[in-house]
Length: 217
Image 1 (cartoon, rainbow, N blue to C red):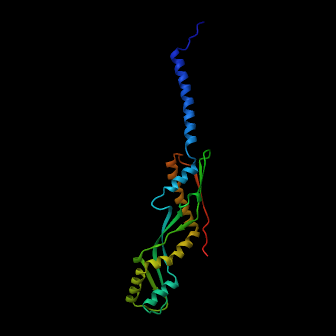
Image 2 (cartoon, rainbow, N blue to C red):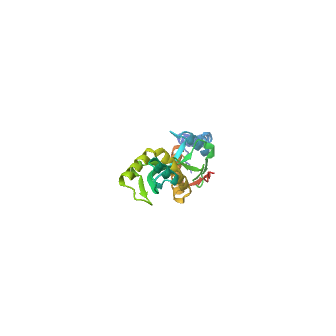
Image 3 (cartoon, rainbow, N blue to C red):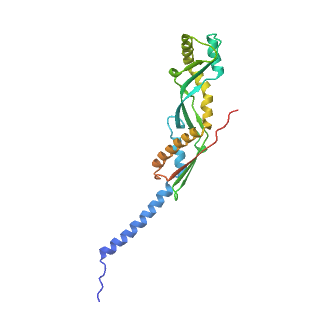
């Protein structure tokens, strides 16, 4: 019984396919070996943050009350003896420093496709006070409408001092679970953009670990 022998062309194509497969595997391994690991890529990514070396993780708008010291200073300008409560809306921006990328940590589990990121302690910028939202309520005296208006105007001119005064409330909010969750979500969104730029694909999960805030003495 005669057997059909494969033609020389078929044999040649078979050999070429094997060579191509081996070459593809070799090239892939070379590329993976030459490509920086995820931690190194993440460090480079942090170094390129612009315009400042920080990550804006979350923003919120809150109404904060000024301290007794601030209101006392405001009243002293007009030599008014009264007890008032001053409050205003302020934009609060929560950030995480990227000035030292080594303070961050990024780990990639290729099998589970999980990215784990540890960050420095979150912080916040000076609250941006909306001077047109300043409200003043007298607690122990009936102040004239004109007097309250003058107090509001002066408080608006003291915007920088008022921002510094409200910073205490902004710092304290860094211990609130809802704020911390918002910051984690912001870092998670940042990490997703990194995954796209690093060409590692969309992770199944991104674990975020925020370093505890340093308490001020």
